[in-house]
Image (cartoon, rainbow over all chains, first blue to last red; front, side):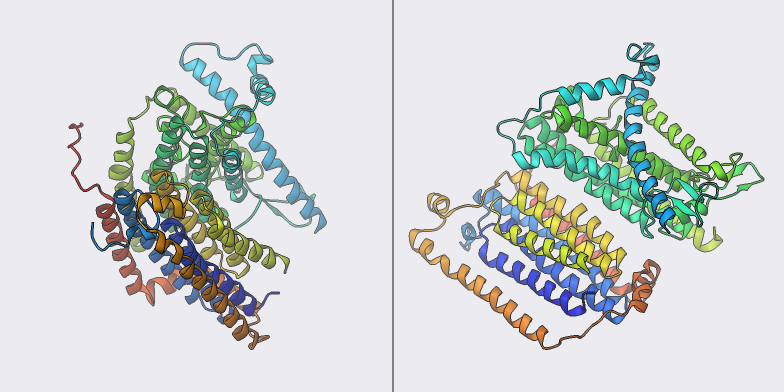
Length: 100
Length: 341
Length: 186
């Protein structure tokens, strides 16, 4: 029977993978995906703590995180599309100028 | 315990094979009904009344050469039909098709006629329906062909749009039955008023049923909402580049999806296995009759109504169906809140 | 429990592959696998509602959106340094400096793991799950009751948030020059 610690370690691993993805990748879409990995790692922590404390609050926070993640993905992807129209590139380094 | 376990495995095997056979049977029904509606004979040569025609089709498909476009993405090209077929079968796992039974005293405790009894069954169906869009999108993208891609984009836009109304119609039933379990929902529809008029949710919530079935037709990409494969414009839509068994998987997924949507509609709105005049012991027979009627309706609709235009479809989904379904949900909730069910 | 390790392995390997892929379409699909595994973990944690919502919202809505954008932009492969030099968005000097932030990121992530593992190791044996509490967290009715009473303000705020996000996405992604008006339709 895995304990709370196991879930927290798994969550930490996933969060670290997401963090590494944000720094390492040179593609706006993959960076957004890495952010989703980090959000999900946090969700796992919430559900695991909620289970350990016998409370549904953890799941409710997950519900809100997902809502915010959906809003973030919609706006983020809209920005990606707008940027891609200007530079024909998804590389964040293509957008370092302050004006165009 | 052992006998119950065996019974559950038998039910699992039975459901799987029943779905496979039903897909074959639907091919025959589709051809026959189309023939009647068009004053033709339909298949008559293979077997009595052409009954073996689906099997002839399958044998032909198996022995055809498997073609893959050179520019296609190798992995995703073969993953896509697998996703479609898996989703179509997986959804039926949580659909109950009969009450509890001991198989005439064969078992020491009753089992449910259902593969898996999940207490969030309605949401599971919704989740699997939302996954099935991947099969089509990936097929379109991996084929690397413009017809496939256009078909896939249309299809995913259509499925995502109609999923909302689908969900709202589901929610209106949840409010009435006060449960997320399909078994509870079916049992809430037991009995009849005055002994004849069944207490089905279709009587109490007819708008919900219409919305659910319309959205269901759009979800399964059937005429008059069959844009993804509109043959006059897109050759064959997302499965243009598929041949042999990978095409057969898409084909079969379409028919199994029809059966699943009909089964879910029966459980949610038509009382499942509770039918007046049919004894509870053979409730599954009533269930089968209702599914058959809905499936016939599907075929009837396909050969009667012309295809919508794409902008009409999207306008209908967002400007008519979604507002109506939200209003219906509000109305049903208010009714349940103030008058009880 | 074997299932925990299976799901955990799938989640970690799929997430690693997400950030190791150069093709975003594969990244999106691998992320679905990772989220599917997380959904399995939620079931193990007696949270079937969270598990199903995970599939409906993430796999069914958010990642479809990602897949859509990747397919429509039709820019499947990440730019290499050569592409960027050709596009004149970076020059040769910055190209040489680019390894720095990447190494920094990897180092930061590794440091993070080490710290967390160290911290978590010091609380050994904590947080055994109480089997008796399973029913109280798995009930959808209980979630609904808390969501619509204690959290009703937050719930209403999220609906406003989604509306704002929707309008914002439409405004941002719209082409700047107004398209010619479509022919009048009946």
